[in-house]
Amino acid sequence: MRLQNKVALITGGNSGIGLATAKIFLDEGAKVIITGRNPETLAAAEKALGSNVLTLKLDVTDVAATERAFAEAAAKFGKFDVLFANAGIGGATPLGGTSLEQFNAIISTNLTAVFFTVQSALPHLNDGGSVILNGSVHAVLGAPGWSAYAATKGAVRAMTRNMASELAPRGIRVNQVTPGGTKTPIWQPMASTADAMSALEARLGGMSPLGRMSEAEEIAKAALYFASSDSANVTGIEIVVDGGATSAPSGAKIFRAG
Image (cartoon, rainbow, N blue to C red; front, top):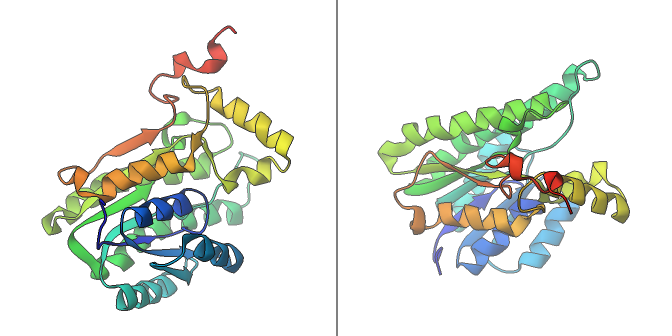
């Protein structure tokens, strides 16, 4: 098992990519700490994940609470070997229809909180550990109406490289998983029925050459590579899991006849 006797902390581990990653890390032998804001989904995640899991109710935008929670987690499970700064929110911010409050909520959760998640974990992170940030293809897509979200993910992409340089003296590797359209609860506000979700999956999947959305487990497997010794000499990079949407857009399924 690739994470035997390792301790991994995953923010936003109560659903979607974070939950899928927690499951894989557990299967690979890790003790896992997950955080989340929603007590109901946290309880459901704890039940689904079973033993070797510590759940913490936490809003990562509260820096003082984050520092306290991470100290508590380290006291219970030991120092961390892996940190996956996964927590984030979606949301459109179209020009002419966005409030300062909406814009700042996305910035504070997806950018500021990511920085302070890493900073808060550092005193409890073993030398030679692995930090994984969760990015997005929105950093390069140029999708209309998503300026705040895209800006945060572009910034996270830059921070991955800066942090990789900064933490290298401790042997801590910093890398990024970069999902394309992935089947997670983040899409529910835009597709509240099964038919609407099927239509959304077809549309988003059609924007990639491989013609489908990613499964959360596929992003989790990229995170596992970064968490394990398989990537012992890898830092400052991103693995893009998007079916080729950003690397070969001209081959997208929507452009093919039949």
